[in-house]
Structure formats: C-alpha cells, structure tokens
Image 1 (cartoon, helix red, strand yellow):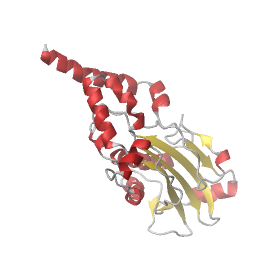
Image 2 (cartoon, rainbow, N blue to C red):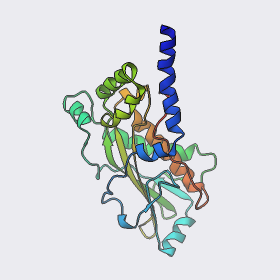
Image 3 (cartoon, rainbow, N blue to C red):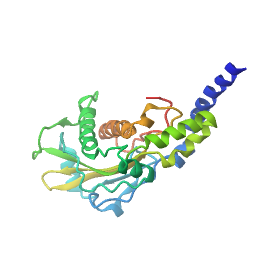
Image 4 (cartoon, rainbow, N blue to C red):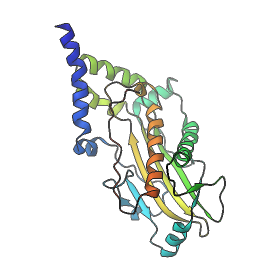
Amino acid sequence: MRSHFFRLMLFWPLALLAILSSCSFGNRMLKARPTAPSPFFEQPRLAQDASRHLPFQKVWTTPDPNILAMGKAKKKLFIAPVTLHFLRPVDKKLASLEISKGGVHRQESDVARRLQEEFIRAFRQSPCPIYKLASKPASDTLILQLALIELNPTSPKGNAVMTMMKLAVSPVASLGGFFTKGTMAIEGKVIEPHSGRAFFQFADKEADRLTFLSTRDFQPYGHAVYTMREWAVQFEQMTRNPPGQIMKDSSFMTLMPY
C-alpha cells in the first residue's frame, strides 16, 4: 500500500505538468505578462504584439525603406555590453525581503555580463549564422544593444515552502508559485551604423518556469540563466528564418529538474 501511494505521488505531478505543457491555453494564461517599455525602447507605441508568431512579446521594424535596405545589407554583428541604465527596482516582496536580510545577493552586473555572453555564444554555435560576429563596431557592422529592464531573483526560501506543500498536499500547489517566482525582462535593438538609427527592436519578459521539483527553484538566478540562453538562441534563429515564419515560444513550464 505504501509503495502504491508513493507511485501515485510521483505520477500525479508529472501527469499534471504534461497535460498543462500540451495546452496552449496554459501557456497564454501562465506566461509572464509584458512589462511597460522603458525609454530604451524607441517609439514603443508603434511596437507590435508578436507573441503569437515570435518568441518575443513586442517587436518593431523600421518603416524607413532606406534604413531597412542598409540594415539588410550588413552581414556583420557587434553585440554590445548589456546596459543596466534602465533597470527597475526589485518589486517582488519575498525577493526584496530575502535581499534585505542578506539571504539573496543582487547580481545584476553578473547577469548582464552573462546575457551578452549567451548572445555571443548563440551565434558562434549556430549551424548556419547569417551574421559574422565582430569584435568592435564598424561602418559595415550592425550593433545589437541589449538592456536589462527587470530582474527579480527567485525566492529560495519561498520555494522551499512551496516544495513541501507540493509533496505533502498536492502538486497543484505548483500554481501558487507566483509569489516565489523570479522574473526577468529585456529590450533589444539593432542599430544601423551609417544612420545611427534602430533597424529592429524587440522586448520580452519571462518568469521562472513552472516545475514540480527543480534545483533552479533554490538558486536565486538559476531560472534567469535558462531564460537568457533561450532568448539568445531564439534571437539568432529569428535572424536566419524567412520573413513571416512562425516561431514557437518557450513553454511556461518544464519537466526538467535541473
């Protein structure tokens, strides 16, 4: 009887997560909502909702045919250091409390550096990149500028409580992780060097992915690392996809425990 009980305890969380992961409704309802644009994002009112066909919530492409033509002609890309100038204060109460008590340390500079590295790595590891990476800006090189807009660390202590609830009560308790989840938002723009104007812009926000048990839940920036890697790969893939091709966004949940 006891072994049967433990098998059920293992089966139900996985079954629930598998059902939710196959449901586009769950993805729409539980994904992070877009954050308000920062001054880094130019002409935000002209940005389009791209969430149904691209892995980014907002995109904008220049309507100027001359800038568009000059941008498309460039085959080199310089990925600039990520700016923290537009970063907003931590606004998750549990995360703020853990930071104030010293349980979680702020790592914005490390995360910004890692974000740049992930975008560089995505192009270097691409099977057929459109752009050749450049080590510095030049007249024949597009410039990718990235801004870290929001960074709320995951609450390890809060997730420890949530994990006990999932094990002792129900795996449905996973859905209560809203208060313990970390969030991260970025904005990016590709600059055409001759004009100095934006050629393309994008913005996205992601929250910790829903899991039953994951080591990332106990690492303040564990989910952020996963998110940065996905953003970089998605952006690189988008640069070489035919115009109008639909790209699937990342899921709000994962069955991977690490």
